[in-house]
Image (cartoon, rainbow, N blue to C red):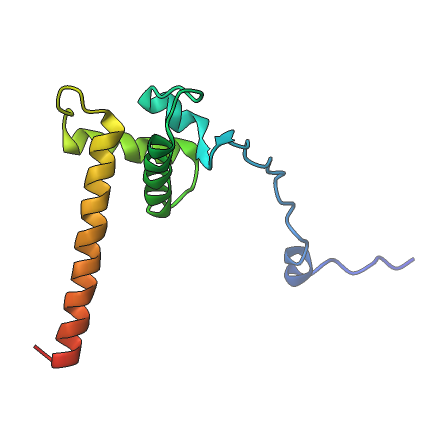
Length: 126
């Protein structure tokens, strides 16, 4: 009786590795395209916010999310907290998200002017 041949090293390495089962991330509850956790972070009540406040929170969330590698709510909230610490305490009567929103608008303006400057430098070779 002949024995079957032993598997070669190539044959043993060809077996597919079993991938671990990864659960999908937990969905974030959204209100007006902004996660509810953002409202909680800033102490904003969902039912009493004006449309202007909602737009500010949406702008902040979209801007931070676009600059975050992993788009999880934890990473977004961390980036918001870091930015708050860098900007400092808001003035009396000023809301925390107002200060961030004003800085965000200024930063967008600076970015736009920088792009224009680079385009002009390339065009006129300064």
